[in-house]
View 1 (cartoon, rainbow, N blue to C red):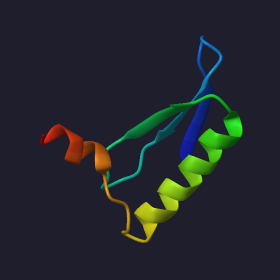
View 2: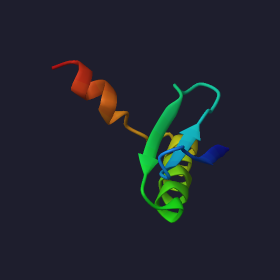
View 3: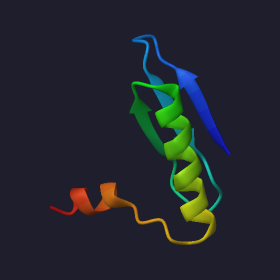
View 4: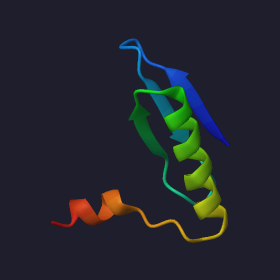
Length: 60
């Protein structure tokens, strides 16, 4: 389950901690965007369809 928190700058941060997956976090301007991203990402993790694109960027 994701945690959605408001940062000091007024933005919204979504943090996903799921067993078997690395911790994922992303910051958004709107709470709705953070919630939607977290829901979609968790759904992809459960279905084993999630692709960690940040890991691909680090290989460059």
